[in-house]
Amino acid sequence: MSAEKFSTIILAAGKGTRMNSSLPKVLHRVGGKTMLQHVIDAANGAGAKNNVVVVGFGREKVEQAVGDSVRIVVQEEQLGTGHAVRQAEPMIDKNDTVMVLCGDTPLLTAKILRNFYEMHQKEEAQASVLTAVMPDPTGYGRIIRTFGGEFKKIVEHKDASIAEKAVTEVNTGIYCFNAGELFAALCKVGHDNAQGEYYLPDVLEIIHAEGKKVTAVAAESYKATLGINSREQLSQAEKILHQRKNRQLMADGVTIMDPDTTYVDSDVKIGRDTIIYPSTWIEGDSVVGAECEIGPCSRFCDTSIGSGSVISFTYAHQCEIGADVTMGPYVHLRPNTKIADRAHIGNFVEVKNSNIGEGTKLPHLSYIGDSDIGTGVNMGCGCITVNYDGKKKYRTTIEDNAFVGCNSNLVAPVKVGKGSYIGAGSTITKDVPEGELAVGRARQTNIAKWRDKRE
Ligand code: UD1
Ligand code: CA
Image 1 (tube, rainbow, N blue to C red):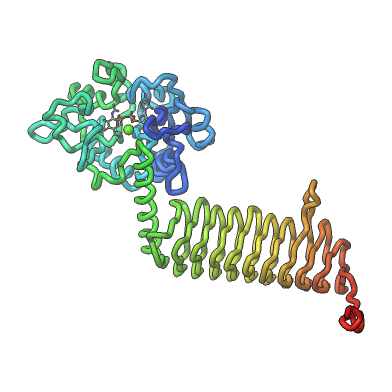
Image 2 (cartoon, rainbow, N blue to C red):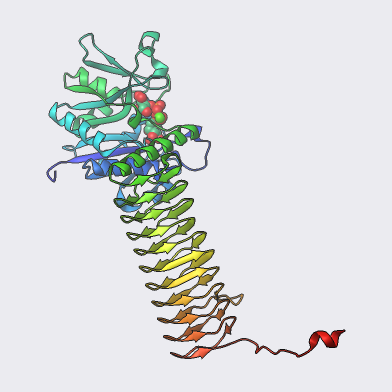
């Protein structure tokens, strides 16, 4: 594949009026990433070496979202798809095969694009268009063929005659071109049409009229090429992506007890023989190991979970959870928390910006913030790290094998030494040396015959 000169031009300059949004259409998220990113990922997966994104409306936001992963050209005024593609000319080598894509088709797969690219090469065509048969072709450009079934031209819905409107084979907006032929033909495209725009599909007719080979290849199913124009269509795409992901996970050996209520983003990885219970969301860059039990009623964002962990009723974001960890119910892990292997985090525990060592137990009702806890530590019920004095936050260190009695407050900055003990109900404000017992609470006094004296 290294010898291939395969570029893409991805059109993303439009506003997307029907989204009724201040965000450019291509930046709306579906399946855990922007529509545009889905298209870029599919292009890369298909083997594209050079992706050029044409931006216009909300260009700063689009540029920021894609970063350095693609090259950007600006279309100052949106004068049509043909005009948009022309803006990319300086970035494309004349000898490239260039695929044109739209940034609002998040259901595309690398496989569909690769097959289309290979078909274009095999046919030795100068231009190819991917078509689809739509149950309702309203709004799309129609593929007009000769009696012999050869490609003739594309007619936009607004320019189509009644007979042409009856055609159900449509232009998906995905094309492959010999780059030299594309840009030569683009110079000849006019804007004498219903919308007064420079139409990209007109280049196919121009190339064809010059006696060069143009092919129109039908996609297996229209679904993967659907363009998203409204929030309603966005929700339909979300559903299709989520069902597709669940099917793939199940084929890969993951048990999903209720696919209707399990939402796994497109890029999430899950190991074999993991079981996902209902009402669970696994989002963003999350990774789950093998043989875990996850959920029910849990949500993980950008969180990794090692193999063999059992986690229920938990919300974790931007965390690392080790292997064979047991967690829940009702746990909240906040960003920058690392839970080492075999740790146990039990009912009603919140952990933030902390490292929890191997085999350490936080079984009940605790708040742990800005803390470094070693291995084999036991925190009794209701322990709290007091990390905030109203102005600044401080860290708490608890070394290996310490035993912290129930309902203790550790007022940071403070260090609890290796193998030391803290009496239940203590408020610890001074460091505890290794192996010592700290008791920081009022000594109990019993007053004899209290009841008798009161009477
Ligand atoms: C286009 C095709 C139509 C096809 C349909 C498939 C044209 C003239 N028509 O119609 O044949 O069936 O896609 O979805 O191409 N864009 C720019 N700059 C512009 C205009 C558009 O970047 O000046 C971008 C838009 O942001 C969008 C894409 O190009 O991502 C398609 O434009 P849109 O206006 O949605 O074209 P359609 O009317 O859907
Ligand atoms: Ca469109």
